[in-house]
Image 1: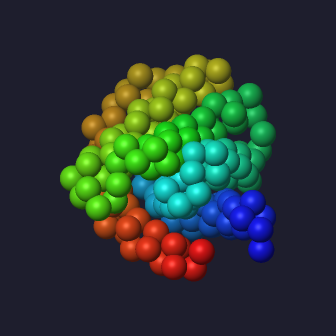
Image 2: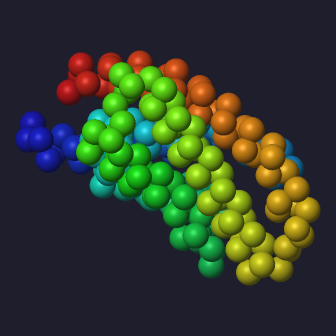
Amino acid sequence: MKDSTKKIVLTALYIALFIILSIYTTINFQGLKITIQNLPIYVAAITLGAIPGAIVGFAGMLVNQIITYGFTATTLFWVLPQTILGAVCGYIFENDIVKMKHTHRFWATIIILQILVTILNTVVYAIDAIIFSYYNYLVIFGPIILRLMASILTGIVYCVVIPLIVDIVKKIH
C-alpha cells in the first residue's frame, strides 16, 4: 500500500475511533464533560503529523456535533478546539520539539494541550450560550476549576496510555 493511501486509511480509522469514543465514553454532568475522545487525535498527530491530526479533530468533532445536536450556527465553533489540538500536537511532534522519551516534557505538553482544549471549549460554550440566548456566567464559568482539574486528570491518563498505543501503532506501520 502506498504511503499516502496508508495515511488516508489510518486517518479515516482515527476519525471513526474518535466518533465511537465521543459517543460511548463521554460523561456529561452539569457543564462538566469527562471523555477520552481526544485519544485518537493525539495518536494520529504523533504518528501521522499535524495535518492528519487536525483532520481527525475536525472531521471527528464535526460528525459528533451533527449526530448529537444537528448542524447549527455554532457547529464549526465547537469543531475548532479539537482541530487546533490535532494541528498543534502534530506540529510539536513532527518537528521534534518534544519526544515521548523526554518524559517530563511529554507529560507537560499533553497536559497543557488538554488545558488548552478545555479553555477553548469553555470559550465556545460561552459563544454558543450568547448566540442561543441561554448565557449565564455561573453556568459557563462557575465549574471552570472542575473542568480544568478533569482535563489535567484526563491528560495524565493520556500520558500513560499514549506511549503504549503509539508503540503498537508504529509496529503495525
